[in-house]
Length: 258
Image (cartoon, rainbow, N blue to C red; front, side):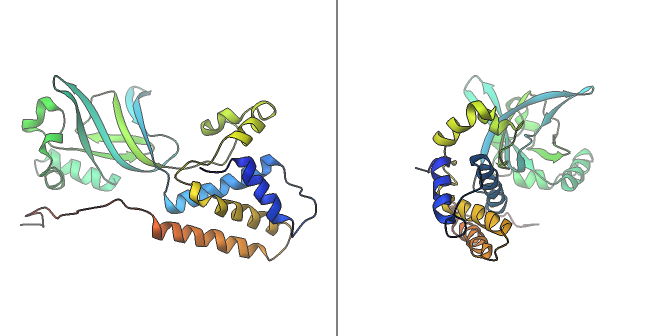
């Protein structure tokens, strides 16, 4: 189990004694630096993942899907359809905005290529169950935080799996709401909560990051020792990240023009 944030603060105090007799950093300042290090680590390694349901929102005179503010990049988008036989999934083909527009133009002209190839082996997850006989897998992209689909998805809810940004502790940030107001909630949360399990194995590296920032603020070149340890941990995490990818087999007759 991961250490509490208070225990990590204690570790930091023990390790910084070689540089200062009296620590002039508060628990809140420590949390700011620690969570900034966690954010940098996440952006490089993408260890933490998230799945949420999003509903349509009114934007002017349109109803649109808006992706979560903390999304770095999407991994998968699906819809769930209630049928007499239970819940069935519908998949979406995620593309860049440029590719989305290109395939949308081809689709409207009756020249399908990418969507057809993609759904060749998964016909049971095309569009909605009622139109599978004539439907294809829908396209999806994100433009200006709006999730666009083609053919347009008429439902009101989608399931989005994505890589989240892990914001540093800050007032007004939804992830940190339970910590505020500080004079009421901070110390209780500081002494009882822990780093998310997917990042817990690297907690000492986050303390290294705090040490590097703090020692650099004191004008000592020794900060590089801890900065290098933090960067090495990022590289090691990338190299050893579990992929859980097994038994990959290329589909027969899947090459272009075959």
